[in-house]
Image 1 (cartoon, one colour):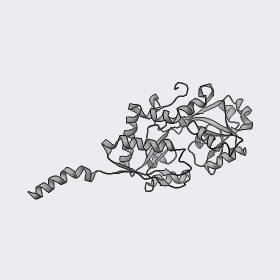
Image 2: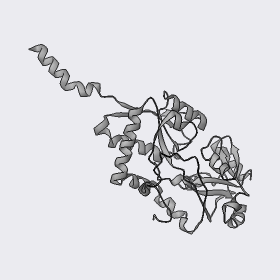
Image 3: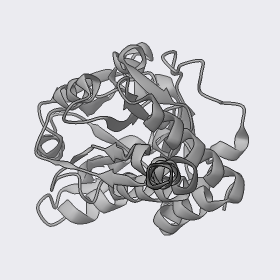
Length: 290
């Protein structure tokens, strides 16, 4: 009787004993703490919304500095990191990681406003078309995902070895403009306007190319990929992804006067076919969204 009782007790506890804890490992450092706070918080929200179906979780950020190339490679290896957020179509990630094909920030990073040298606003006021823009140079970090997009569209790229160094290069007129996502430009400018007083936000142009950031998960963690996609799908359906987005960016988007800017579109032939480009609920449009 005692053996039967013990066996029944084990059966009753077995779901808790065998439940696998979801461990999430992403890169976090001082340089990116503010830049990626949207994503850090989003990961927590998604994991919490899926606790009922997928169980408990633990977030173990890797604290340190990495180049973009090293960051990607470490995530592909899946030991120190098993999650990153990156532009869809990034070379190497599609083949070696599991993409979660839901735009995390509603494609906002594909809308670009420029940081420029304050002397050059009259120059940019004359830019009306892509042909005009091709006469100028854009600054980008080494291995950034949109370098191939600029080059495909005939735009000359000047690469900098570090993210922070690009602001100094712009101030020194090493290139003509630093193309920044709508989610990036205002906090970046505010954080550096004292250090780089010659830098300013260009006032008239809005560049666009399809460039969604998505989650990429190590192939060692397919359950994590499934969990993240499930959570994001829940957030899309109940509107909480929109609320998270608006909480972070509504004020910024209003401040940039987007509807008054000249829109210049360039193509992105590297966008993977798995991205749901026709699902308008997943994308921000400055000319239809308030």
